Image (cartoon, rainbow, N blue to C red; front, side, top):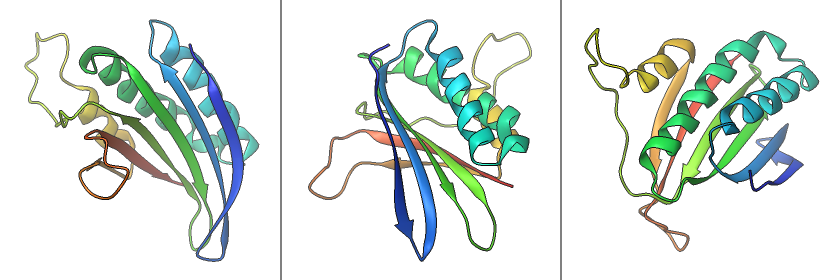
Length: 148
């Protein structure tokens, strides 16, 4: 796993926000390692009750990178927010232009349930395409939000 990570304090709408960013090439063991990082961050931030859902969500998002992004490179971002409600936003960005969607997997199919699981265990999820602005890469960020 190529690891370039950092944790920073960023101000947003007057509320302190903490962000952790990890760039990696997804391999067989990457989801397990990233799950550990996400769980540790949530405990550190006092959001331990979100651990299981966040761990499942980030696993599914990384598996999608592993299966569908040719170079398997991505950046995982975990951002805590506070204010009227606390929570986290987990995002996985890659430079591959194909946009994911929820599939209608049959009972005997081995795959196709990842985003349905993400939708089931998080408060919101979505896909933001990088199709505007000077930093346009043609990629996208798949994200999910978990509220405390």
